[in-house]
Every structure is written in structure tokens, then in C-alpha cells.
Image (tube, rainbow, N blue to C red; front, side, top):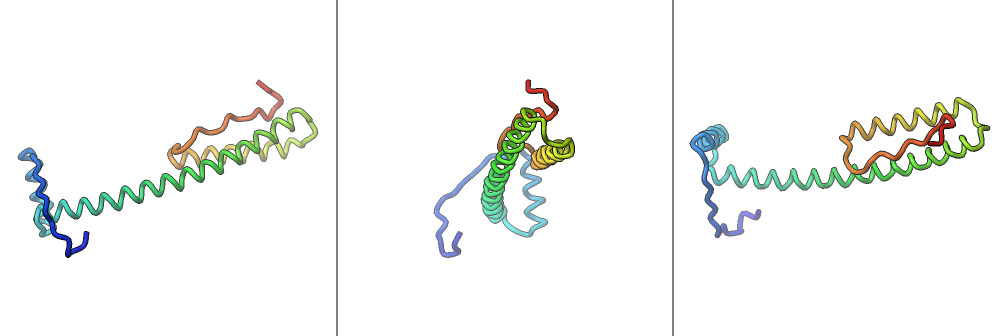
Length: 126
């Protein structure tokens, strides 16, 4: 908020005695008023929400790309299973890539999209 912007609205809230004590302890430690404390929290919360939303958007883009890669791997695996002319080393490498993608999704907390259905690589087309 701009320092020149006039504050014209008053907001009041009810708190329990315990909540009031906690607020006073925080206020005293920071050496600010309750109003300044809430304004700071409001500003920080706004920044945090913007950051979280941006992060989620970024994660979703990563998931879209991982899903595209996963779909490509699945297509390759299906062709390999139909053809049986690709080495076991290539199949194992595809499996390794797929497992790494699953690990990336797991580390990102599963946000965004479901992992693609795993294509059978060993000849089981169920």
C-alpha cells in the first residue's frame, strides 16, 4: 500500500484471551502496534499466495511435459512389444526413464496430473 493512501476502513475481530496474549507477545517482540502487525501479515500473505500460485503454474507445466514424455515412452514400448526387434538394453533404459519420471512426480508432491498409465514392456499387453 502507498504511504499516501488514506486508511478509511476500520476492521475489528474477536479473539480469545489466549489469542490476545499471543498477539501481544508477537507485537512486543517486534515493537509494533497490532494494526502494523496485521498490515504486515496481510502484505506477506499476499506475496506468499502469489508465490504459491506461480509455483503451481510452473509445476503444472513440468507435469504436462513429463506426461508427453511418458506418452512417447508408452508408444515406443507398444511398438517394441509388437515388433520384438529391440534389444533388452533399450527396454531397460526406457523402464529406467519411466521410473525417474515417477520419482520426479513424487518429489513434486503429486501436484498437477495423474501419472500416465505404464505401458507393458515385457510383452504383456493387458
